[in-house]
View 1 (cartoon, helix red, strand yellow):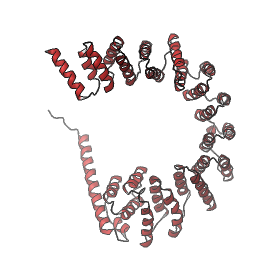
View 2 (tube, one colour; view 1 turned 45 degrees about the vertical axis):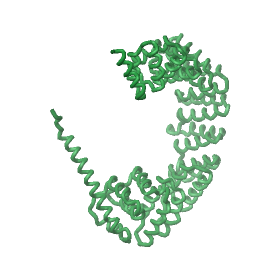
View 3 (spheres, helix red, strand yellow; view 1 turned 30 degrees about the vertical axis):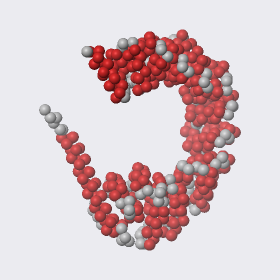
View 4 (cartoon, one colour; view 1 turned 90 degrees about the vertical axis):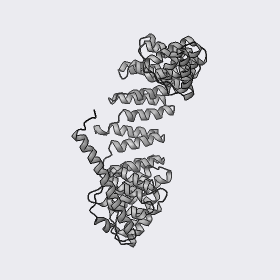
Length: 492
């Protein structure tokens, strides 16, 4: 009996079809207008006289259909963006930039402005903002900068949001000369009498820090205060991150102190701020200073998290100071910041990162003896490492011990690595136990694993179990065919 369609489902279906039909009809009509008026100086007037509805899908459909008429297509897109009933989304700008191939043909934007000038088309600041957004989503720096020179001839002048968009474009391409351009734009902005906002200051600070000009970036704070704008957490964090990134430790500590004593709770550094500084200190062998930052966290009632602890543990391990890593764990567990299981699991990961598999294995076995349960990332990583060193029997044994202790979140690739190793090295009994475990748990295995397992199972007469393994993976037609033949012979 056929399913009855609810009225709401029918309405949605009809609405979808109607919307699709309306979009197709509107785009076709707009295309006709563009083709008939592509050389008409009053193209925008012809478009405005049309009663057709505008929608993002209609606009994109039009752009996709006239690649041979880039200037009319651009004029249509800008006209649509200026329409009182429509505003382009970020997605629409990105899609339009792609359809118009602006990265390949940025000269189209220059030709567009020439077309406006030649045909005496009224151009406003909003027009230039739409063009700038196309530059932004096409990552076109030079055309974006050239708009500043073009604007006066149309009687237009940039505002603060316009400058910010150009600065944001430069921030996405922070090379040294782009940083100097950002600073130049900032100076021009101030000279024109415009008032920078928080966005402006953050972008300029990031540009200066990227160019290793941290002192100049710090000077921006003085300008902010002179302009009656108090630095907030966003500004201070941008400056702090920049100082850390270029290794200006003293500056970073000054900024951290300012954040801690700003008198505004919103400016207080958080766990991310402190951890960022610790990471830089550990990477630069300043482990004692990193521990000092941990003390500052505590005095400012900021609790460390897993990332903080892992950052410090990794720093100690990479410098061969495993003893200090244990001391840190005792401290963290004692303060109640993070559990013993989490700390020791993180230490296992850090030891594996410096290729100390033996120490990692000792810690995990000690955890199991004490009734502590390692987390899934540590368990998976250690078993993988044992397999990579061809220690398949030990890997299999550890796997079993972890399962007994309740660690059940093993990745499918871990099962596969153990199985392949056991099969290829002739550990039939251990492999058979693991195969049964795989089948019982419904673990998906890869083709390489299936091939190795099936070969072993056939050799010991476990053809039915082999077929179950095949069902858990997508295997080659040849392997599947061979198994079918085997099963046929068994039944005969």
